[in-house]
Image 1 (tube, rainbow, N blue to C red):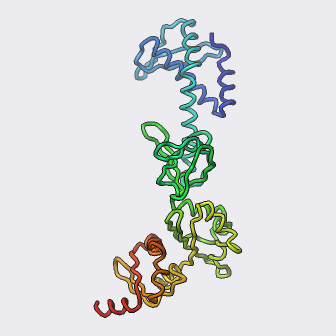
Image 2: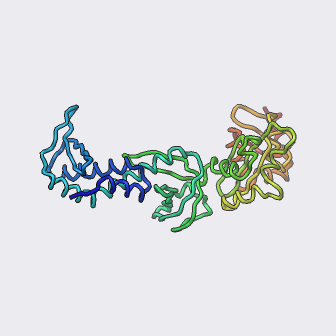
Length: 322
């Protein structure tokens, strides 16, 4: 016979660090499953534990509750079987549900875990403790690869359920991951003294972080970079060497563009509905555009318009034609 049910429940709750009520419901569900399987019952079964360690079972139909005619010996035998078999499955489900609820509130924040396995498509399955999360290949920085037991820091960017199964997705390429790293590394950002206006990334290659402050006494760019790069360098290292430009925001569009494309010097500019044309010295075109056009790509992500960089001669020629 099943003895000391309440003590069993409390013991498992302590061991698994799960609330007593969840363990109790898991055991009841396991016993109900055992009864349905043995007695071939399709209806919903409700199981109750008495103070004297007795077990009762009922069939629920609408608002009616009918007690099942099962001997105490059969009930205890079924309960013992369920506790060994189905109870473990129920506990796993309970742990997943607890883990899911725990991480719902953490969506959009940084989490830490250990790689449990890497699938054939290079998705890293990351053990977060109470639940696993997935770090797909496309959310990994191109330069990096993970193997079993590697420690991982990533953004928890999606927490959802699919077919009643919790799915947690991680990202190390999302712009918000860089934003959260800056908040963790730079106290002035965390406090709101320095505001991050925008973040654009080409993961593993280059990023631009636009910052501003209402305090005229401080330089927001210098604050974020730190003395000799003391604050920005550890973040760059975390992002597989991603170069991070910190840029001062300005409401003056030309001044803002000059900050975005520094050290290239903008000689002239004009803006249309869909694009911005900027003129630089001919020998600064490559500097302004950046390797593989990375500076214009990042500027587009920040401003939302295509940036066309050209020599001053070409700019003036186009200006005359229009």
